[in-house]
Image (cartoon, rainbow, N blue to C red; front, side, top):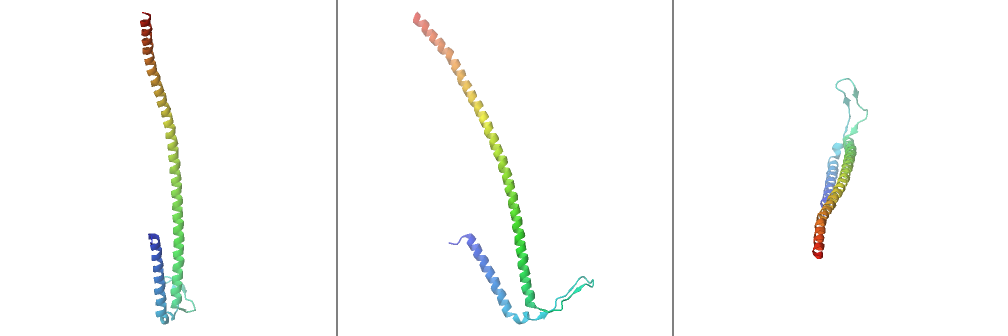
Length: 153
């Protein structure tokens, strides 16, 4: 079974092979036109600065050079994009670490507060038990004193 990632990779490979095939088909069908020579020239905004090489170049040279230049630009864009993504990931990791540190401090503070409150609650429970025992002790003492008086009588 093909998962989504494999389907995406397969689709990219098919598209690249299709572009390559049609590019070769274009070159083969138009080889006579592409062998014709032309001269490159450049004139900058009428300033009198002109550039014109002595040598004529064929059209296919321009076509292959354009593809190569496009590949260089695409690679440069990919590298710059990867650098940007890596920097964003580092920024997110730093923010995550700060958040984790703050939350761990909050957990420590809450644990300390719970321990303090637990001791207070334990102390209050023990004091409550002592009070109950003290309240019950005089009743027991008076009950036992009444029993002693009754025995002597």
